[in-house]
Length: 236
Ligand SMILES: [Zn+2]
Image (tube, rainbow, N blue to C red; front, side, top):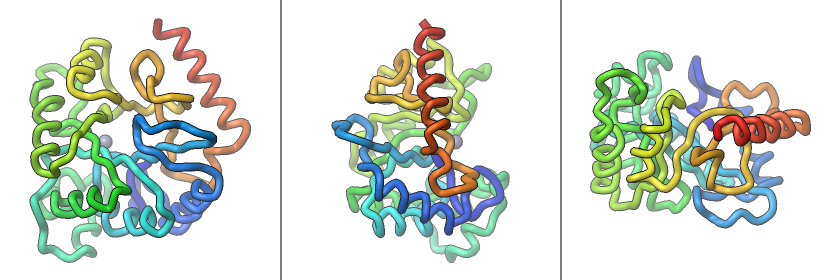
């Protein structure tokens, strides 16, 4: 799980991020949700579709031929934007949502271009990027409507959902399963398949890397496997 690059939060500097992708390219096959897992595979995911994904990350995916799932909060996506990239990327992390009308997120035009490349698959990250467990949340808007907008605008099937802030409960998960095959959270555990743990796919936090291969160290992997085991036993 990544968010973005060259930002002040939930981010990696572009240089270490590129080395991280080089490492992944040299050791793993990148796959989309639901694809066959043969040998060592990684499913790269990016949350929120901040505009630096289009300008800085997507070119690297092309350079290394890596696939990624991009989780999009549909409310914040403009059809297109004429503002220059420096302005659109010039906001602090915490100001990105409030300034979405200034093009701080990828536009539908940009999403379509990336989808057409075959390297980016779109998931829903709800409509308004709200904690779905909060009081008064309209799950129909957040789950069904978000999928509908993305599918209509991009002409693709959207079968992955990423819980905003990783927050859900069993009732919300069951609702999500009505519309999506794959539901993702945070959680720092790993899997051998796309069934997830008790129906939810856990992800490893790949922001704030100190070294390009930090999350692939022997001890880390052991930790993610152990966490998965505990969760499998505990959530029954
Ligand atoms: Zn998010």
